[in-house]
Length: 204
Image (cartoon, rainbow, N blue to C red; front, side, top):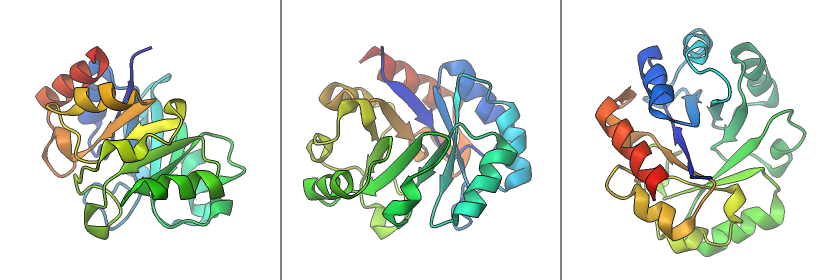
């Protein structure tokens, strides 16, 4: 099966519809209030209606409480949750849906630490992004992620139509994740870029 593609940080129903139409396998909804791509519960429900099964509706959270995540998961109909902050290991466990743990890599040891101390369903690897919580378009040495089993690996950080095929050929991950690489501005997706990225990823 070809690599799966996650279009993250969608803020408009028309962008969610376009991502699905173009072949995205997952669409990410960002619930981190400090993000330029933040959406609240009302908008998220509108977006979710534009993302039919079997496309995953992934909720992205940064240091939210279990109650906050569970309430949004139920209200929006999230298929999976992505923990993108400094959540403790116990936050990974006992969810009724897949959990994606984001890791900001400085070197291969960061992957080893997560795999030793936690057991997420999927590990999303990205660059440091200036020390922030994603969305910085920061690439990393893809070899650092090679310790993650390919069936659990999601590659993010600085991907765009021109380099996504190389990332796929290098790591053969479960999925690739992109936000800024397919945008005209923060939170506003570019249909041409989405089409090119999805085609290039799946053809690699």
